[in-house]
Image 1 (cartoon, helix red, strand yellow):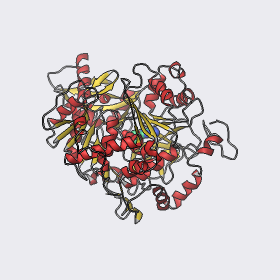
Image 2: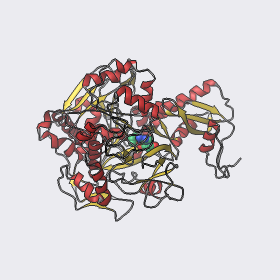
Image 3: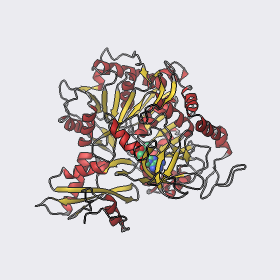
Image 4: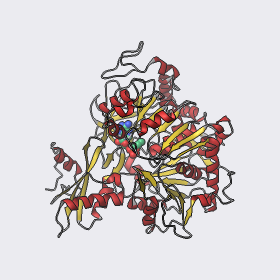
Length: 636
Ligand code: WT7
């Protein structure tokens, strides 16, 4: 990379980092501009060509069926299974001997799986699931830490056509229970615990609590990770290693033939109401989307060692820890624990040790590690790195430059990828051949048409803020909200009919580069984790002292945004520092540590509209000492 002009390329405005000739010459996507034009003119032809790079049991009759908008269908009539392309396809070739996964536990445990070995475990566990009565279309909840068995569990579900529903292992009882209930899972896969910051995360204990209120679950499969002694309910709970020792758990298992539009998984995400909302992704379009985006944006090559440091419990992990790298036949690395355990050099040490070539993480992790200073990364040889990435929230240019200079040694382009649980794949993102501007996600991926519009849907002028929308369908798009198609239409497709509403505000500069500003709905991004104000508020109100609560996000140096709660106490309770701590712990216990409010303030009343809705916008403006804006609907 250089930040001087490259011959023959137009100069862009602002702080620009141009790709070096050698990065351009090697990139998987060399004919970028041509592909953009191609996708623009012939979206179906473009995605059909991408899909042709994968194997299908039966090819499609039509790439895109838009006869029932916004219920788009992709690769209509095709038959496939994502596992066929993620595993079966590779074990027929020399790649059976290639490493699929290298794993390091926080406590120093090491494991690795070749494609052959991973496929064998997946086949064995697929047989176990079948023996527990799981079949095509059934939902299975997975609640685990970052251990190899989460890959095996997800892939085994997909292989037999079951729909997995992974719940992030950092969530707690209420969040888990609501998600199990909504999905009506009969089988749950978990672990006794996981290692995080030198302590055990009590996964099984949380499961036991949640299941008291989830009668649908008949079987719980428990992976032994920590071995610290957990209670096992006879009949209901089974040790994973015992099931895997049964004769049924042999290495031969058929991959279920799926329709391209059959659901692969559901994944819960936060929206504007408290009810859990599960996004539905498919075997066909999703597979084509993540295969292509990972190959082009992160330039995955046969010899790479890819590390996406997210958690498999979020969409980043589904798309770019588990499925995307396997579809590309890549070698991945996964680490179980905290980045600073036992010291702040843990990540840098592992990059050196395993020769990681591409690192994909979140701004909050970069800011968190940056605080410890350059000496920690400088103790390690990071020269294996060739590309870096970030996702989850806007990255401040200061953190971008630190990442670029201290970690990437000014050699590695940074892919700032904007996307969502709903989009399944990167939507606005640089590619290695595109000039970078720190803090900008650059341009829409080929085939994606994004725009920034005002309230009435008219495009705003360059550098003006507006709503970010997407104007054309894409293969990995969510198909619906599980069991709630009306909400799918209402939430994403009704503000601007025909266009997908992202829920973000953004600007586009004079070069067409997108700058994401943040959520415009009741979603708060804490350390890149997506939380709904409604979920936090209902956790607060479930405490006996709280009558009413409002949660807002305020700027935080490391987390990006932190939760601030305002509560009205019930009669007979008085605010005290002890009660503040009690309420913070209460939210953490019910929702999970990531939802723990930074501060709790006791108030006598909350700003509300005349129809009784809390005006969080006003609370936020007051907290920041900013003008309150239009308050004509305020009740006071
Ligand atoms: C929201 C989606 C999809 C991966 C993880 C997040 C924010 C995501 C960026 C980025 C600025 C970003 C947006 C978006 N976001 N990536 N590169 N720059 N903001 O998925 O939990 O569904 O959250 O994350 O606000 O709407 P998610």
